[in-house]
Image (tube, rainbow, N blue to C red; front, top):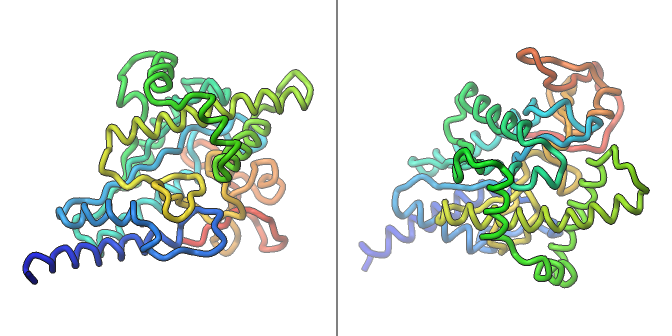
Length: 323
C-alpha cells in the first residue's frame, strides 16, 4: 500500500507548494487571503502535471494591445510595463522549477484580435504588439514563456473572419450574458470595469457623455462575450492547463486571477498605463499624462519606454512593483 500511495502524497504535497507560490499574487476582490485548499481546480491540475513529471502549463489570456487613449500609454507597442510583467511571469516559473524540476511555462494568449474592432484598435497595431512581445521574450531569454494568438489558430485568415469564427463557435448568447450580469456580483463588476475602460479609451467620441455611456455599455457586452469565447478556444487547445486570468477571481473559481504588478485596484494593467521609475528603483504604473508630470521620458531601443522620477517627493495612488 505504501508503494502505491506515497507517490500521490508527494505529488499532492508538491502541487500545494507550487500553488502557494502563486497565492501572494492572487487577484481577487475577496476580503481575506485564502489557503491553497480553497483552490481545488488549480490544485488538481497542478498535481496532475507533477504526478506525470511534466512541466506545469499555465495559460494567461491578456496582453491584447495598448489602449488607444494617448493620455494613458506611450504608443501602440509594448514598453517597460510589459517588460516588467513578462519578467515577473518568467521568474515565477523559475521559482516553480526549484520545487518541481520539470518546471513550468506560461502560454500568453494575446487576445487583441478577438475584440480589436470593439475597442477601436487597428489590426495592424495588434499584430505589431504581439510580434514585439515575442521579440521581448526572445531577446530577454525568458525561456518559460511563449505567445499564442488568433493567427496560431486560423493562420492568415482576415481578422474579421477570425472574430466571427470565435464568436459564432464559442461565445455565450447575449441574453444569457445579460441575465448573468443582472444576477452575479463578479460578472456585474467585470461589466462595469470594462465599460469604464471603454469610456476612458474613446476620447474622440462625437456625441454626448450619456450617448457614449450607452455605446460603451453595448460594446462591453461584446467584449465579454468574445473574451469568454477566447477562453473556451484556449481550453480546447490547452485542455489540461492551469487557467490564469488578469481579472479578479474568487477563491474556488475555475480560473486563478493573477496580479502581474501590485495595484491599488483590480484593473490596472501595463497596456492601460505607463511605467514610472522612482529613485529607489521601484516601479509604478499610472496614466501617461500623470507620469510625464512627475518624471522625464526615457527611450529604449529608439522608442519611448518609461518615465524616471528625479526625486522621492510626493505620493501617487498607483500600482507599485515590489517583486
